[in-house]
Image (tube, rainbow, N blue to C red; front, side, top):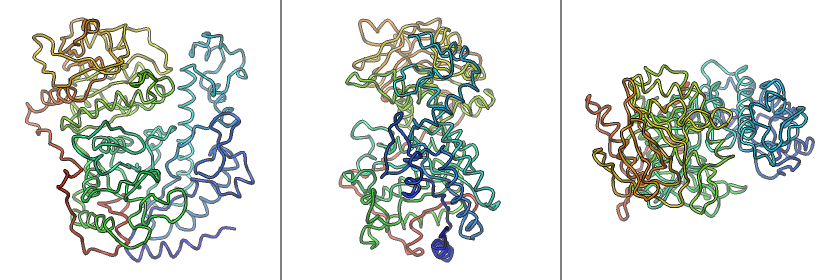
Length: 617
């Protein structure tokens, strides 16, 4: 028996007040009766060890029992309410990909996936190099479970497979929902971009629009310059990382997106309460709109009185009485109402484009190649490299766009070079021949390609390439290297004599150095060090109608911003392009707080969703 009538008055009330509704499917967590009836649906984080119950997403959503009951409730809910005039779209599941499943059935499906991909154990032995440490398989039954694995080819295949499971689950739900949805209704899911099994370009390929949750730390974490080292994780720290999250959301489909969750006030664990200073909600929301957001929704309407998120602040406090947060977000709603169609479906400007690789992220999480300051492995090795370039561009006042390798090779390199004259491929360790040749063709067609460490070092199986590094790009870049070193401390970067390249104060190489040897490339900068001083830090070389610049370290943002701004200026300003804008801080200076004027628009219920525009409206 299904009791669905409780939702009718909610949707009716929303419709009466002009509120449009995205209806969600309830598959985010299993109810206790289902867990009791089918305990085997509990996900496992290591083989044979269930997570247990009491949180969320503790379920193996590949299990037939879970899928059977999920399909029943999805069909009942959507069939009942798809025709309601308030419903403009559907969100299938929520923030998928939270767990890597080690369940027995999942592992067996993984083996079957490999059997279809490689055909024979002889093929997988060769492709994965399983001779090493006597891991050759004589039968598919010899494949070990992933708990103790250290073979990098296995690790990358395992993470890719987990990504496929998440994508398949979301696509399956989308297909079910579309059996009932009207033509004017869209289908999406809310993506949390740091979940371990999310490959967003694949995940969104069968969705109508991208949606996500760019949560960000507020107050002084939005100051410029940042008061301390900041990072990008499930919640961002620093204004630059808020923009980076928005740019990742746009990149999923290279199209405008929905913000289905973001800060109403305090977020995260109970001991983190950092509601925004006056004006910060307004600034952050407009920042998201400027990068392509067509809707801003806040989690959630009122602060909960029980449960795991009791102190995750809503628009209304626990008293349910409108206060400062409510007034600030209501004023933002008035902003959007006044702007209307002028800010609907914006395509953000992009001075430079950076390649973002989920495969490389996964590979370098499983086999980190950069050290942390304490000498331990950095599981965010790819993000560390990528973020150094993104933040350098941001601090230089440049606007960035992100590009997935799958999207890259689907485009014509000449057309892309004409539209986007500066492209950064840094940390792209896992890359196919096709992708590397595309990068070379982009430069030959007139683009300025900026390469960073690890790009072109491993193939799509995570095997170290036989070619000289960077593979397929060495001759075009006028250099090669066969030696590299991790760094325990930064090393000063200095201008090469006669190069005309200016290193700003604080210029240094960190974490890693490639032993670059020039084969004709012009050396722009080097290292002030008795050993590493023999190698260039930055080189540049003409290639075809374009140029390739190589940065052989993880640069500090001080001089990288100078470099990227110089590249952008040399490629575009001479032809009359706009000057890169200065970005104001999203945090008020001490003693200089701003106040948003209150608005008299609409009933308070509308403040829960401030929408410049939505698909299907």
